[in-house]
Every structure is written in structure tokens, then in C-alpha cells.
Image 1 (cartoon, rainbow, N blue to C red):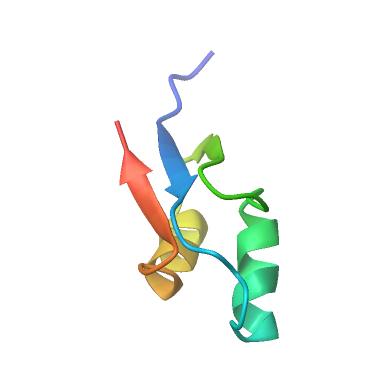
Image 2 (spheres, rainbow, N blue to C red):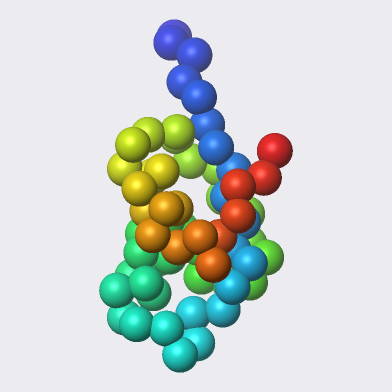
Length: 61
């Protein structure tokens, strides 16, 4: 199998009082609760979604 790179992201901001588009982006990343950590494939699509929410998610190692 090919060795695929992954990225861990953590939700650090609340979706309360945020536009619906930002809430849907969080759900698309698999995040819905504060301090939840998910591991996703490191793709351009995931990086783009993270770039739209720099105030709500953080990349962790």
C-alpha cells in the first residue's frame, strides 16, 4: 500500500454565532464539539477548508 500522509486537526473555536457556511465546513471536516481531534488525509481540499477556518481549527502534531 502507498504511504498516505495524514494531518491532525483540533477544533479550538465554537460555531456559536458563526455563519452557516462555517458550521457546514466544520461538519465536513468531521468536527462538531470543542477540543475534538480528527485525523484526515493531507489533501488540497482539506487544507483549503482549514484555511477558511483559521480562527476555529488548529493543526496539531
